[in-house]
Length: 228
Image (cartoon, rainbow, N blue to C red; front, side):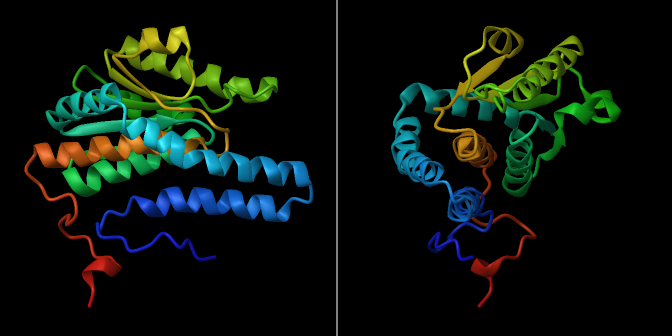
């Protein structure tokens, strides 16, 4: 299944993740025989460009991203945490930071944090939480994902970890727990990763620039754009 994302100039590809999520949603709609479901997926995908433009045109959003990048650039480690559909976003966020800024970053399921990474948390550990999965759902089981990650945030805060939250859900307790909160628009649960990854990719970009590194040509990485 071709992504048709167009040429990727940067070695640390950003379009691959977002286009894969979009393609998976298209495949899901194609395989589903419910025409209402198909229409909703198409309708939601059509909203994406406007939502992305809204974020990128927002002065406050960009200032906040740069502020977080300045803070992150001062550290040598970072932890990225999420549950459900937010976990792959955490992985991608950590990958981008390590690829282009050379800061050690680890993506981890928030529910498994206390089985290892929690030992590393102190006031010098930026902890990026991707939050919101399940919060918009109607089933209690889905909501449990959201409430569980709030509990994980409490555990990090108790150990003086610096919490930076990326979320598409406005929750007072999440705001209270966080040192910084980046809010993104909400379209649907399945498309949420596309909007949540954007600030994390931008933070990684700005960290690299602040450190005087070329974000388009990270060291040691070899991909198709560097061959031939």
